[in-house]
Length: 176
View 1 (cartoon, rainbow, N blue to C red):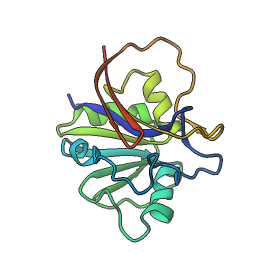
View 2 (cartoon, rainbow, N blue to C red):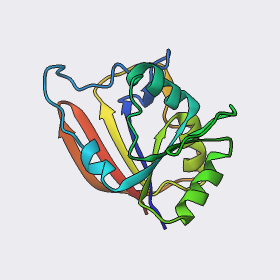
View 3 (cartoon, rainbow, N blue to C red):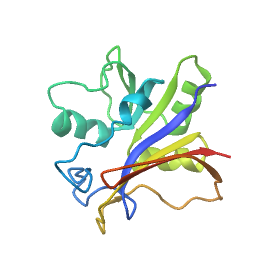
């Protein structure tokens, strides 16, 4: 069965975007310092990315409007909009849990849950995320889009690795 991994960054106070949905604060404590590239290592074992419409829209309109940055992956965009899919970008209207359960049963490499909170929360609730790779950014936002919502039952994790670079702490957990 394929592994489902949440790989995401959040502020120290638990937000994945500011009140305007922006992520321009996602950097270390020293703007001129070089950050460790954990993404390149992570993505080697991934062939599928799942995200919501807002994350997709932000990527194609703000973060990388000229090029789809996940062109080597099969991308599943969960949306209520009826849009035409391409070979590598599939727009789906299904529940995130149904999509991830279906993908898990297919052959392939890891499945990356990219965002946003409306996609992540039901997957956490259903116990469908196997690994949590969370980068803690040295910023307190005070408000915005929270990564974590309330969960109905306790979820036990095991810390498997930590890394620190330029004030960013990456925590890597597996479900116990």
